[in-house]
Picture 1 (cartoon, one colour):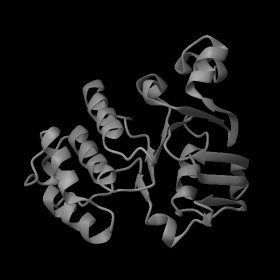
Picture 2 (spheres, one colour):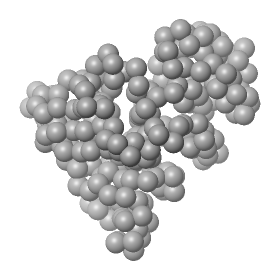
Picture 3 (cartoon, helix red, strand yellow):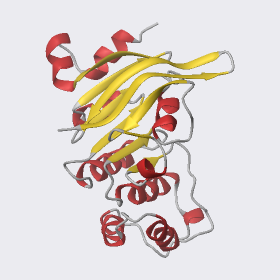
Picture 4 (cartoon, helix red, strand yellow):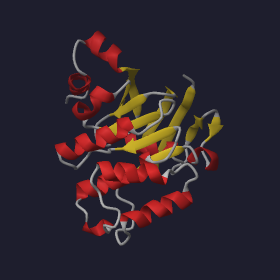
Amino acid sequence: MSTLLECRKLTKRFKEKEALKQIDLKLESGRIIGVLGPNGSGKTTLIKLINGLLVPTEGEILFCGGAIGVESKKHISYLPDQTYLNMEHKVKDTIAFFEDFYEDFEKERAYDMLDKLHIHADDRLKTLSKGTKEKVQLVLVMSRRAKLYVLDEPIAGVDPAVRDYILNTIITNYDSEASILIATHLIADIENILDEAVFIREGQIMLHASAEDIRMKEGMSIDAYFREVFKC
C-alpha cells in the first residue's frame, strides 16, 4: 500500500464558522474507508476539498503527493450527495458525455453494470425513479478507472433494496489498488464492507482506525460504537 491522500492541518472556515479544524489524515491505497459523522459534522466539506470544489483556509491536502487540482481530478471519481445530471437526457446520452469528458471512463463497463441493474439505456432520466437515478449516477462514477472513488451519502434517501444494489455495485466495480471513501451517517448499512473508519464531529477527527480494531477493542459493532460516541 502507498499513501494516496494526506491532509495536513487542514482547516476550512466559512465566515466565523470553522467547518474543519486542523485535520491530520492519511489514507492508503487499496482500502474502503468510511467517513462517519452526524449531519453537519464536516463530512461534505472534507469531500469538497478533496475534489477541489473548495479551497483550504489553512493547511494543505495532497493527492499522490501533489496538490489538489487539474491532475488530481483525472484520478478521483466523485459522487456528490445531490443529483447533477440533465434530466432531459437519456441514460445513453449521459454515458456518451462521460466517455468524452473522462479519459479513464469505460463505456463497456458502464453498460455491463446497467444490464446487471436492469436499467435501459434508452430511458430518459426524468422518467426514472429516485432509486434508479441513484443507480445511474453510481454506474457513471464506478465506470471510471480511478485511483480514488469519493462517495458522499451514496445510500441516503433510498430504500433498503436499492441500498443493497448500490453497495454491491460499489464493492464489485473498483480496482484492488484503488480506494473508496464513503461519507455517510448510515453506519449499519455499510460497516460490513469497511476496512477503516474515520469518525468526525464538529469538524474534528475523533478516531481513525481499522474496522476490525474498533470491533476488537470496543467489543461492539462500528454502528453501536458510533451511537455510543455520538449520543447526546
